[in-house]
Amino acid sequence: MSQSMAAKHAIWPRKKDIIFNLSERAQRAEKNIGRENVINATIGALMDDYGRLITMETVYNEYKSIQNNDIAAYASLAGQPEYIEAVKKACFKEYMPEGHIRVVASPGGSGAIKLAVCNYTNPGDQILTSDWFWSPYVIISEEVGRKIDTYQLFDSSNNFNFESFKNKFLEISDKQERIFTIINTPAHNPTGYSVSDDEWDKILDLSKDVAKNKDKKIILFVDVAYIDFATKENSRAFFKKFSNLPENILVIVGFSMSKGFTAYGMRMGAAIGITSCENVAEEFHYSCVHSCRANWSNCNRGAMTLLSNIMKDSEKYKEYNEDKDRYKKMLSVRAKTFVEESEKIGLDILPYRDGFFVSIPCENPMEVCEELTKDNLYLVPLKMGLRFAVCAVSESKCKIAPRIIKNALEYIESKKVIGEK
Ligand SMILES: Cc1ncc(COP(=O)(O)O)c(C=O)c1O
Image (cartoon, rainbow, N blue to C red; front, side, top):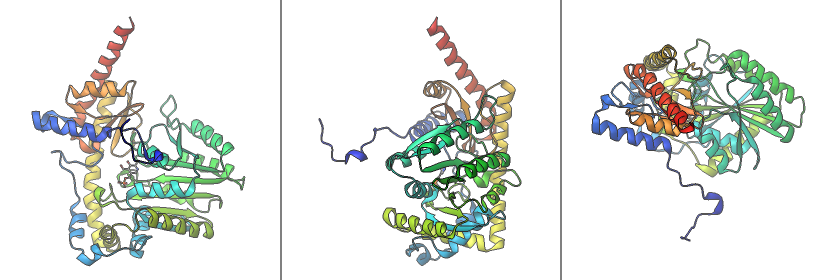
């Protein structure tokens, strides 16, 4: 046996990241046969029609105006005070919930998930999320000995499957002290679904019901990484529902600058704790700050200053919003094109509301994905289907992609039927 040095708990299957792998293949194809002949729907970032990463002018002009010492200096562990205020404003806008709110800076939304998982679950605990989910939830949870359990996001009519959510929530609450649930909304990755206000009411009513047992601790982690691309007028209204909840329900919002500020590599976000109990809020602050010190110390000070400067200057904020709205519109047009074309030709997709991705349920996603590469269409295979990144594909390609996908699905299906005969 060859030498191994890593501690047992640090040895994981040696899998290459499938998304980066497919993305590399797509880029190679673009080089070989021309960008116009390839559909690269693997990338989880806004790309322009020529396949270039979109960077918001207002964001990067501001960043470049920051003094060196404001980029270079250490920041405070919980985040600079101005950043903490800026995060509340950027995240909640006019829908700030009532209660005790604490913000702790983190490296992206990923850092916020890590803070919440580590500090609000015990080793061996099950964490609940939907069966369509962003795979790093598993990596973050497993790294620290927690497991992900799932409910079915959609029922057979493609509506939010509250029954499944409720059953799993109650099942976990029967066996654990803590019920930690991750809800990625609005603009869920990978489906593009957004939980409606009525569905939020049901989730919160169920949580309140379980919270009558004071021995239970309910933590709702709301991952809002894509909230800036939610198109509904009052898409932040649900935040108000987190006001005055029972003391044994803690809401933690995972905020990220990655998408809303096209600042993916700056690694800046925050965990926002919302509670009706001051002690729970203070405890949240100190638990998270301890983890910051233990894991990454302080965060990117320049990125904090960037957000603070934009949020405190109404003119800059207005210009930033205009900048962002252009890309939001671009994204909506692409998604609408993909969804409408899918409907027209009868390609089954999951209910899309907003965001960077559309998902297509299917069997054998890996095989379909490989088949599609023969048509120079690259997307991401998931456990239960395919993820198409409308954020990275031009409108004209969004129009032709559904037909290519449908043909590949039918071809794989026909091969299976012949194989069965
Ligand atoms: C669902 C979801 N949550 C959170 C994140 C966090 O991203 P970051 O750590 O870059 O802020 C992402 C990024 O792709 C995501 O897709």
